[in-house]
Image 1 (tube, rainbow over the protein chains, first blue to last red):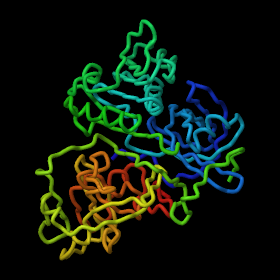
Image 2: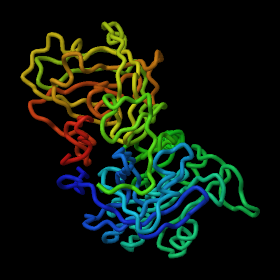
Image 3: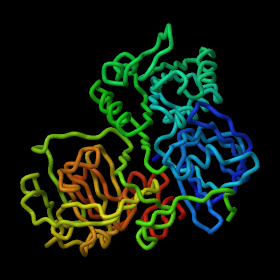
Image 4: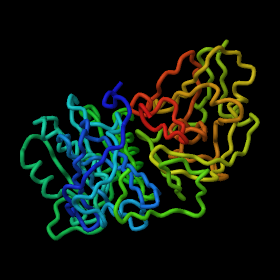
Length: 250
Length: 200
């Protein structure tokens, strides 16, 4: 059983905005200070609650993008044009504002520091967020677990955490990011330029005998394609952990 | 509770508050959530069983299952990830039909599935016209992504209890936490009491 991170009731906590950092044209990372935060494991998420003046409330879930760091947590929010919560978080929130959140939630889609073999991370769009938390936790623990990241984005400018991913790769400790850009590629692009399919996974994924675990996060059709492709390549379904999000509501 | 400065929210006129539990919002599409790959197995290898605290195992092949009396149900469903879907239309076999004639002292059940997923429920939440094994959604055979060929449908609890790719019910004397119930989610999952996580 993996679910040992949650003990007792998850109370709503006041979370103060410390910093807002644009990542791409559609995404922003928000750093919160959450007094009493119990810590978290990479891959877990939080529930966010907003309250209007008349008492109306809206809740949504967001993956935590940061590794455990005292009372600070970071969420990377993609602005969904028709969304109820994400445009507020991305456009309205200012440093010093306080919202409510509770967590951490989830005991399955979480980084395991004792993995044997190679870990595969596959991200579609802003599905990178929980996988970035894993890359950050891995680096913070000076873990040498061989880890490949395949990150699918529309264009190079849509790649979130671009510079930090390059820095993590430059450490030379077995973290290997690879990119596929599905809409447009810069001149001299040396990465991939197609949607993630079984053929691309066959090139990028470790041999099934080497795969410790695969974490896949992105929109539903992306996750379906990746998970099915990994099974087709001979990987055990039990080693493929998925987290899905769609454009619903956001 | 702190007011979120400048937050107005977007209330929906077509989402009466007596149908949308606290913390939920109404979705028009049907999001897919699973912990792993979608299992795909041939129907001639499919069966449905009732096991555990019963005298002898009850088993139906796909053809035998399809020959059971079916019901059409229109229900609201509530996912713990916050979306609710109103008036979703299903066809299925009532769990009462499957348990007809079963003599058991069990008070709980574990639904088990292709792919290894499990979820636990009190038996009384599966009986009395409250639960079905659904094989059609919106007039069409259930998509694999949504749990086809057949999934449990228990609309009065959070939707993770409505196990996709269900292959049977194991009747148990005690409440045995299933997959999400071991991974941080509530043992019972009543959306109206917002029983999302451990301790709620």
